Length: 113
Length: 116
View 1: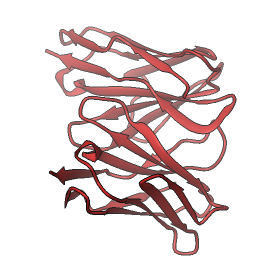
View 2 (view 1 turned 60 degrees about the vertical axis):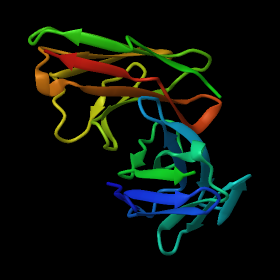
View 3 (view 1 turned 90 degrees about the horizontal axis):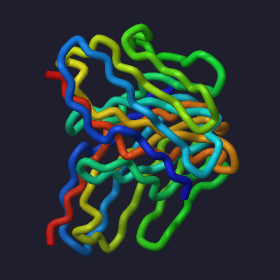
View 4 (view 1 turned 180 degrees about the vertical axis):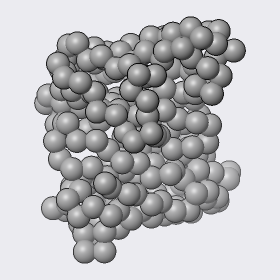
C-alpha cells in the first residue's frame, strides 16, 4: 500500500517568512495529492491539491510542487501570518471517489508574531 | 464546498456500552465514506472505507466486530463502537467523497468519544 512520509514534524517561523513542508510517497499509482490544514479541535480543511499531470500549483500565498520522478511534493507558504499556525497534513491517493487517502504524520506550524 | 455533518460531536459513556456515530453528506451523494481515528497530536489513522450498499473494508489491525460500519444510503454512514473500553477514547472523524466532487474528500467535524 501507499506510504507517505512528511517532514518536519514541527516548524516555527517568524511572521512574514516562508514555510516549506515536504512529503514523499511510495506508490507510483498515486496521482492526487491534497494538503489539509487542521486547527486544534477542528476538522481538516483542504487548502490546495495537485494532480500528477501538473508540476506546480499556486493559490495566493500557498503553492504546491510535485516531482513525480522522485515521488515527492512540497507545500510552500509565503508571507506567513499568525493565523497560518495549525497542523498541516499532506496526503496521496489515486483518482476515484472510492480510493482511500493516505496521510502524512502532520507538521505543526507555529508562526511567531 | 460540500458539507459533511457528524453526530454527536461529543459523547461520554461507561465502559461496556455501545456508541453510534452518524456521518451525513448534506448536499452531495457520497459514494464512499471513510472513518478515521485521531489521537492527540497525531495523524489521521484510516479505520475503514465504506461504500454504499456493500460491506466496509477495514484497515489492518482494526477489529470489524468492534467497530461496526453501515453505509445504508448515499448520504449516511454509521460507526458503532461496541462494548467500548477506555482505550477506545479518541477523536473519530468521517469523510466523504463522490458525485460531482470527484476527488476531494470532505471531513465531518469529528466526534470526541470518552469512555469512562
